[in-house]
Amino acid sequence: MNITPLFLTLVLLFMCGYLNAEEKPLVISHKDEALKWGPCPDFIPKGCEIAVLQGNPADNNLDIYFKVIGDFEIPHHLHTSQERMVLVSGTLDVKYDNHEKATINTGEYAYGPAKLPHSAYCHKGEACVLYIGFVGPLDAMPIKNTKNK
Image (cartoon, rainbow, N blue to C red; front, side, top):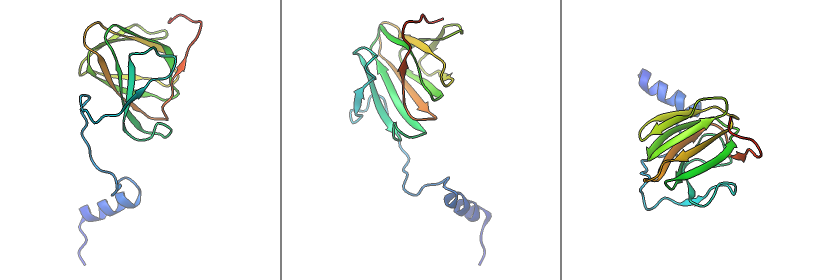
């Protein structure tokens, strides 16, 4: 029996859990009418929605779309997980405590460290849709009675 190196590698990856025969590749547009948009945490005003793309919000490694209408303030908050983000539409200002404000334009990547308080503002006009990949479970905790430093 002649086992090729590629075959052996695939078998090892599958056995170690790096390949999952049940997982399927996917492509999802933020404009897909089949997306199931749900509410944001209560401390964020109306005009904010979240759609789960992949994963379970209570588990590690979750992908979501986060959407707010134009001219929208996202209150000061933090997450226990790091955030890996790409702005899909709109223009978004993000201000992390003790850091300069950053403007994210459509198509740009941003990284948010775990437990670092921040707030954001979606510019007037087009809604801001942000792809966010969370390393840990999804959470968002408001920061009360403080100014964004």
